Image (cartoon, rainbow, N blue to C red; front, side, top):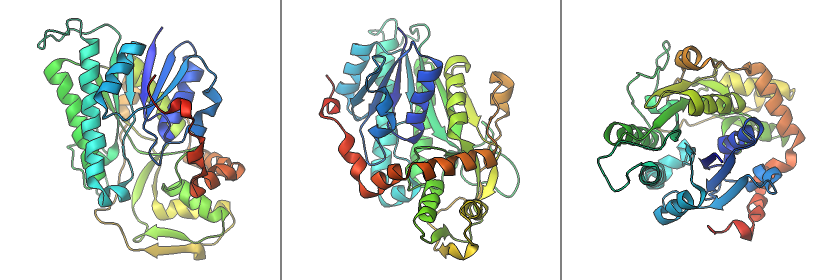
Length: 352
C-alpha cells in the first residue's frame, strides 16, 4: 500500500490537498500529521473520519521521536510537507516561533525520512534510497522578495525574503535543497503564489473581507492598497503539487502561479461589488513593516514539463469562493468564536 504523509493537513491548503488525494488516489493511505495550532481545524476533514485509508495524528513536526515512530508504523512512501507557521503579521511579532517550526521542524522531517528511506541506513555516506520515495516541500513565492512593476519570478530568481515568515521559508527551502545535494535525498520544492478558496482561515485577505461584508463591517486595507498579488485557486494548487509529487524531477524547484495579478484594492472592490456595497466601506490603515509591493509567478516550467495550467479564472474562482463562505456562515462563525477548537477528539490526542 502506498502511504503519503501530509504534514499540516488540518490547515487550509493541506486539508484541500487531502480531499484531492482521496478523490484522485482512492487506494492510497493518507497519514495526516498536524499539531493543531490555531490555524488547524479538524472540522475541515470530518468527512474522512471513518475512512480506513485516512489516519490523523496530532504531532508537532519538531518532535523527532514521534515522527520517527510514525515512519516506522506506517512505512511512509511520500512526504508532502505543508506544516508551517505562515502568517506574515504574526511572524513580525513572534519570529522565533516561525524559525523553530519552519526550519527546525523541516530538519526533523528530512532527517527521519533520510534514515528510513536509505537502503543502507548504517552507511552515513550512502546515497542509495528506496525506489519511489519522495519528499515534496511546499513553499511560497514570498521567498523571492518583492518585484518591481515588471517581470516575473522564475525558479532561478535569487531568494531575497523581506519578513521573518518568508526568511524562515527561504531557510527551509535551502535546507531541503542541501539534503539533496549532500545526502542525495529525493526532494522536490514547489513555490506558489497567493492561494484562495474554501476553508481558508479568516485572518487571510479574501475570507477576512468576505466575513466583514457578511457582518456589515468596514474593510481595512493596508497602505494605499496598491500591493499586487498573483492569485491561485487552492484546487489548481493541489493538482499542481500532486503532479510534481508523481512526475516532477528530483532536486528541482517548480513555481506554481495562477496568472491572476490584482492589487489588494482591486480585489477588495471586487468583493464589495459582489455584496452590492460601495467603496465607502473601505478604510485605509497603516501599512505593515516590510510589506512587499508585488509578486508574480512564471509557471512556464510547470506547463512545459508537467502539462499543468490553472483551470480557474480569477473571476470564476472568486465568485465560487465568496458563495462558499456565504453558504457556510457557521464555519466562519465557529472560527471567530473559537468553537472549532472543541472539535478535537481525545482519540486524536497522541500517537498510538
